[in-house]
Image 1 (cartoon, rainbow, N blue to C red):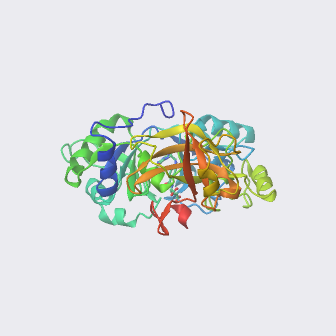
Image 2: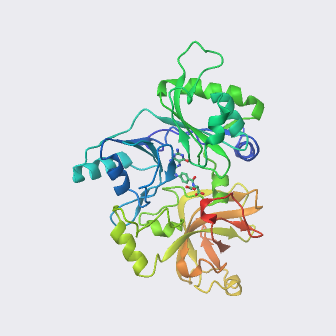
Length: 391
Ligand code: THG
């Protein structure tokens, strides 16, 4: 369940077929569970700003941004994409937690003039190198598609409605079209604005995508691990603060002009020397793991020394006597890198040292892993894409 909805996670042909479609052709994912929390009214901007630690003063209509939400202690509540739909309408396209109630609660406490709702909007993701060709066919508007930069979107009753090729007599399907998605590939998201027409939209995409080898899939864990992208809930702990995510400064900006919930707490953390642990990657060094081994959302404890000395570590068959210095929150096999990789948190002192640490598996064994900054790099080049972290 995701936002109290079912979300398809794997299709019959299997994870390898989905991965290949995503990286070479185009994959289609039903991500309707990424609900929209709409803020509408004269104070919509004020409320949106108050609940994200990113400066959105200059956000333009038609632009989306990755907008982390924090509580009064700077703890991450959600990591939505925020879309400015018009001057008085914002959508938070949320990950799996109760943003609707949080936004209503904050709004009422401030006496804001804004309505907070969950409109009938259901995103559908088309991700992969051939996704642009496919959306061009769906919308028949190459100029529009070519004009969309990363995280831009368009919403227009004519230009972003989809006419069914087989049923042109039916009213066009209303959508918002964004260039975004939870993968490092080129990708688009169709925000369907009439839930009753979901099946029809899916069928239209599958039919138009046939010549691009489209495959149904789901937000791809293997690819997002390679890209070092955060999975809220899986990779965030109860007490993860926004500074620990290691995102670029403009995403988490405690010293910006506008007020937001968590500002004081995050400033204090910076003033006291910064976060004690940081989100990072792990390269698993030994071959004890099987290709199918995959973990998300459990917390494997990490043991090691703050020196991260490889020779010292290799002497431990059982490193439990070492200090507990972090946690692995997800791991899986990367076919791109030819080894297992993971994500999690490590003591800040080890972040940039290529330290070798011991990761305790659920069966109590200790696996050696090397800490990596994100995005993962191979021969100095980011292994995902352009991931924002690389900037
Ligand atoms: N699409 C939409 N809604 C969503 C998601 C989505 N809601 C839930 C969840 N996914 C939100 N989380 C993320 C996390 C990361 C990214 C997008 C949504 C992402 N990150 C890039 C990175 O980390 O490299 C780029 C960030 C940037 O440049 O701004 O894309 O997928 N509609």
